[in-house]
Length: 336
Image 1: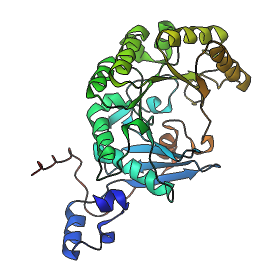
Image 2 (image 1 turned 60 degrees about the vertical axis):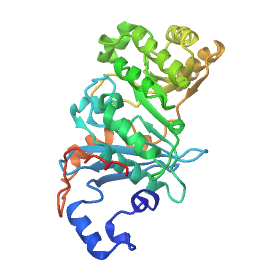
Image 3 (image 1 turned 135 degrees about the horizontal axis):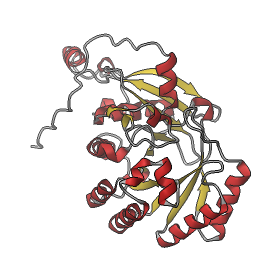
């Protein structure tokens, strides 16, 4: 645990205080990592992105984001996504499977090494996939990173984003962990939200907001409302006023996200002036609203874009040596 998580060892060969025979046996029977970095990109400002490919050739994207308070990473929870949002490159690629705990951990380890010499202490589950659709894998990953023998990261420095899976939001609330919850709202009416986010037909806005209210009541963590601004569709003054009404009844922070257009969908990015006007309307109503920095556009930073580029142009990854087990992680031994 110390070598893998504290010293970020890439192989057992680096663990020089373990017997050589044990290191060789572990390397043959229990590979330390099963993913390979198939693509890596870097943009001005220190944004870095990697595509990790697993032995079954499923892949996941990870982004390292620099901020003044220290680096943060955005990790993926699934290979693809089954939510079918009409603006997302990941959804356009379909759904393959959920990632296991160790596979998500490998994304964080890549980011932790990429962040050196700075220490990586924050993460968001906003990459490919719907985190709460992989509930056990995501929660197991967050618990793993919180453990004192790994990174000891505070739950208050972890954020889980969701399209609004009501049963899982309520389940997460009952865990009693102070994890930050971000709701991908993106529209203020059920008609428009169902048009761009089909999951809204199962869980309409009123039901989702009731669940996030319950989450806040249980955890004390105020919800962030993510609002993707799409040019000419949901970036008008009326939409801003309705969003202010929602936040007045369900307090939280609003994070405005200008659309990063995807080729498969007929939506455009909003004009910068319109983004600022939307923010000013919210602020005039007393809403705490910020505009997300457009970090990493040069590195295909929107969910799923790097994966789609690799699937189209990249060469197959050659996995050499023993193939790691792809089944569930073995149970932890009971404490003595």
